[in-house]
Length: 178
Image (cartoon, rainbow, N blue to C red; front, side, top):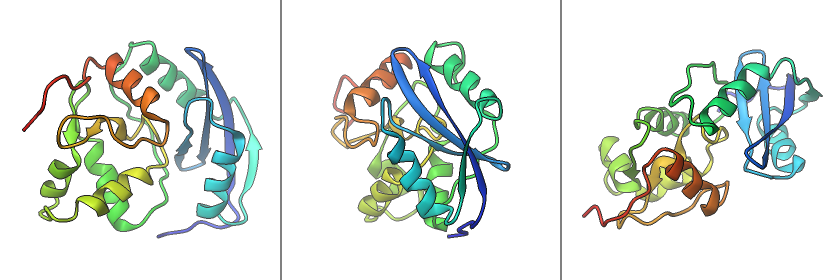
């Protein structure tokens, strides 16, 4: 899983669109994006499990590039990100997260479609678990993954946040896909 130890992790609290979102990054890239109005411990607990012995340092300036990008996205001014990420996960999780990054803005995919993309149609639950472990909400667009019948399902940021993001992208599923 490539667990990093004794790293210095920088964090900030972005307030935008009536939401506060914790962001954290190492010198290598963005490592965590919290759920809307999520508590500090959501970020701290996750970082300490993936970066044991890390030192959390509040540094708004170091996170400014990520804050600006997220603000532009939430204001509808950008549709993709090209900033460095430093995601900690298993090789399978990283492969799933990479696949999520290829879902175009304004489109959705089902968990089944992602599993089929990996050539393992029976691995829907494993794909769903990897998606649920995504540390960088929005930047790794797991909100674009929906249930097979077109329903909004599971999202660490909550279904209201998922619906808001899909609405922003004009991608709210309105009909059954199958």
